[in-house]
Image 1 (cartoon, rainbow, N blue to C red):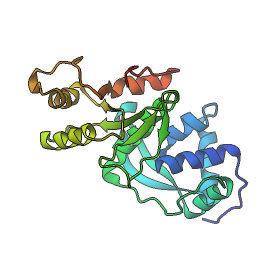
Image 2: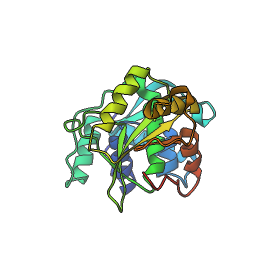
Image 3: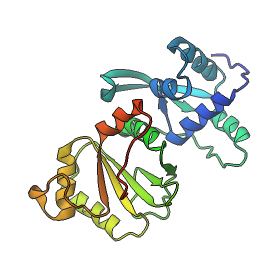
Image 4: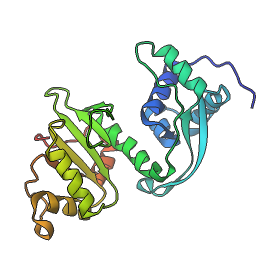
Length: 238
């Protein structure tokens, strides 16, 4: 494919920054956030130009977005080396990592959902980059309250881990002063009951609503449903 010389728009730059922040984006995520007023052919046309300009690269994936009525995602979009360089040219006050992203296909569905969850939470919370150097336990994301500045560790749980693994994670968060609270976004209630039972020590006698101290829970369905709403309410105690 012959490379074209393309003048980037403000929307292009914001799209590129969004992809950089999340490593990759699907078509529906790009369409709904960056081109909400445009029809699909218009969005495809712009993405095609960004690909021809060697700014974006599509990567074929075999991924079904179950939370979107089984929508099949043919490709996801990542930044190229040229895209990273051009993004740095515009984001002069921010250091852009020039290393290309290597996608972990085993985590693709989790990361796709995480992007959707963060899109909702960003309406009321600031999302901070996770520092690998300072954390004993690396959460999926760090939320910061815009007023109180409290830090919340976000964990997206789609499948249940072993009891031993959860005990390790819970102990790590309990003994750390890094976070004021921990928010578990869980795919189903069985996961919440397993984690909640270990946190409280009630095990199988744990009930939804029992006090779990600094650990809070939210259903994934509640977050995804709010994508169509103006705001999402989180517990005031978080």
